[in-house]
Length: 71
Image 1 (cartoon, rainbow, N blue to C red):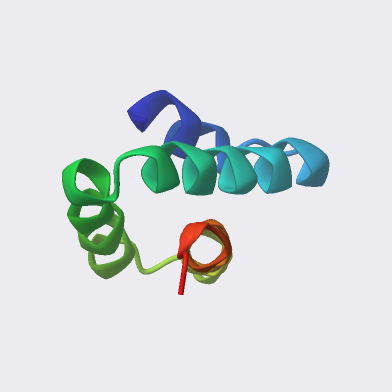
Image 2 (image 1 turned 135 degrees about the horizontal axis):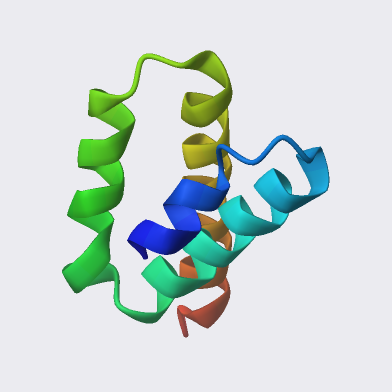
């Protein structure tokens, strides 16, 4: 996951967006294992663009998680 988070610093906006989406997918696959790391990264970074991308990742986790909820 660290490699994908590193891609969020790429100069290409499309790469950054794809990385945020991919991080969300990875975390969705193992929420208990990875979600806290994502929150920690959000707290550690002060860069607005990185924070925004992490929030997009969290949104993706929420979307996938809610879609798989059988309620």
